[in-house]
Image (tube, rainbow, N blue to C red; front, side, top):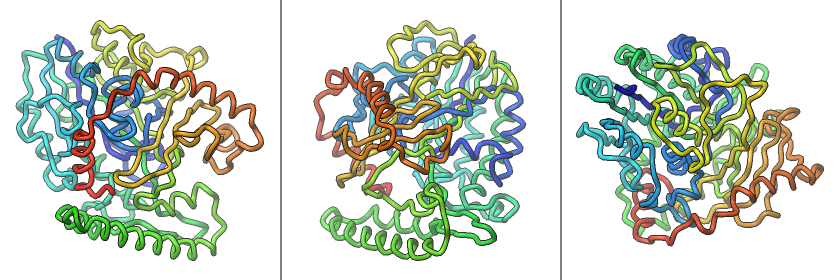
Length: 454
């Protein structure tokens, strides 16, 4: 019988917060688990938000090839093959827990557990964790199963469980929640037989953390999670007629907050990457693709997975589907997707990296300045989505890993090289985008508004 699969996607989980030595969280269970599996320490999402990232994780293709994204959000193209299609042919059963907005894009199958949809405000410690653990008792023993779990604990609004709201669990709210998730990882592992199961832990995208220590002073711009949660629940019920007024008030308050923050930060000598983390607000119309928002963990453990391996070459989340199908020995034409099979692991000295395509997520109901780009292990390049000569950013990752200095103006040759790589990926873009279905777009965007997305 083929291996069972648990895919754990932790929304907004940054790669640099996955390992204990890199942060102030208590991730002892994750660190113990690392010894039993393979960790790709330089994995990157194709996008900085959930829907576009999902489209790549579950199809092995860049978002623009899946139909989920065109000039507006759309449902998955009917002729797009997903991971679920391949598994279904091998007689897999599907179980899962996904936030309620997930169903509107036509990506996921009908999961067999009736309680698979949950409100985006529900967290592990408020009941979701126990629901997940209890589902393991109903998984079949006579056929392989796939258990898809998407957690929103690290997605704003950040609410720290009381048990973990102490300094010894982390410096920031974000890191304290990571400690909480780690405690649930232990409970999850106790339910999994890794001799016949593959567990994959990853994230759809990263997140900015708005609390740092400068010398002996702490700058804390973290949001009030409890207050934000009440606000989101209230705005769910806001009549469409009042939306323009709501947006006006919201952005007026955001601009006021930013001015107040800038006044405080003027007293400190901060680097650009520190400033952008602290100043990150809700729904800025200026979009970027810094590693804070796209560098994610990618970890495999279980049947046939090499143990105690940390692979540092750059990989992408489009690699997840072909890698998993290889491990499951499911026939697959690897030339039909954008991703690469990462197994069997090659020596890092001979492994050939592929440039990672990246794009920003548009706002709902507002015009945002979106960007697309390419990342290699040496350079990050992104520019305006519609105009290749606007908003050009280039970062030399070898000398400037924190992306503090845009060197596009002084390295036009490298800009041209990166743009050529991008153009080769986009050359078939027009034939990959289908006609838009405005009814589908309206439905998707209305659901996202209910979650508090503008």
